[in-house]
Image (cartoon, rainbow, N blue to C red; front, side, top):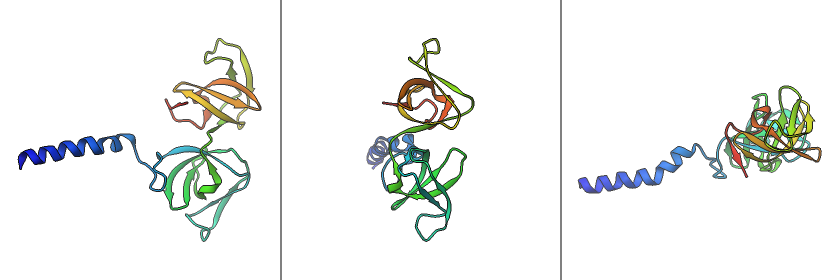
Length: 165
C-alpha cells in the first residue's frame, strides 16, 4: 500500500507540475492567461460582462490596438487595455497578431539590437506598430513600413523577458 501511494504521488507530481509552473490557462482556448492580442476591427464594443445583454462600457476605434486577455468565458474574452481598464469583447474581435504602443518619450528604433547601431526610425508616444520578435530584452518592430529594434521596456505589448519568434 505504501509503495502504491508513493507511486501515485510521483505520478501526480510528474503529470500536474508542468501545469502549475506554466501559470493559468484559458478555459476555452487552453492558451496562457494573461496573454497579449490585438483588436481585429476598427470598432470594438467593450462590454460590462460576457454577452450582448451587458451594457457597452466604451468603444475602441483602432484596429491593431494591443490588449491583454485576462479571462475567458464561452465566446467572450475579458481584456485589459494599456490604462488598466477591463471589459469583455467577443472572440471574433481580437487577433493573435502581436502589436505594440510606444510609451514614454519619443523612442529610437535601431538597425540592430544595439544602441550603437544606426537609428532607422523615431516613434512618438501612442504610435502603434507590429511586434515581429523579441529576445527578452530587444524586440524587432515594424512601424509605417520601417523595421527596427527597440528595447522591450519602451512600449506596451510585451511581458518582461518575453521571447517571441
